Amino acid sequence: MVRLDVKKQIVPFRETSGFDGWELPDGRRTKNLTDEEAKLPILKGLPAWSILERIRSGWRPENERVDTVAKLLSGALNSTFHFTKMEVYVEFPDSQKMKQSRSVLRASGYRLRADGSRRLSVVIPGDHDDVASDSWRENQESRLDDLVRPYSGEVSGHELQ
Image (tube, rainbow, N blue to C red; front, side):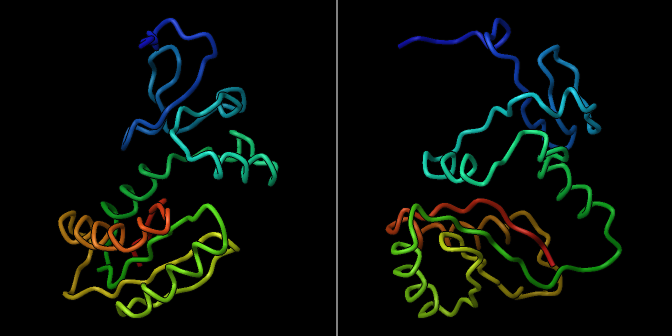
């Protein structure tokens, strides 16, 4: 096994740093990227089909200026209202697998919305006043993940509403 020393990287990249925004190759952390920093590749594990989709759609690193985790955390922490539902995004390698999973998810009581040919939005209503608790979100995503995994589905994110 070859281990890479990320401090001696061949291609400089940026990676998510949670609530701190982005970590840059020089070790700095920032929430606001310069135009040059936004062009840096993003260190992120993605399935091959997702990479191909990004290539087909013309996606570029500069399209992702705001770290998704920081955006969600900031919104939740600065919120003055209660979230009542969560929308979870699930991606599939092909439309056939997505269609197969839809019937299982509907039978389990989930409300669905197709978001493209290989992505589903699954709306999960809260079972109490505020769904922003970590344990509730993790439990819901875990249950959903168990249902979509047999169809090669992957939870790619969520949005509290």
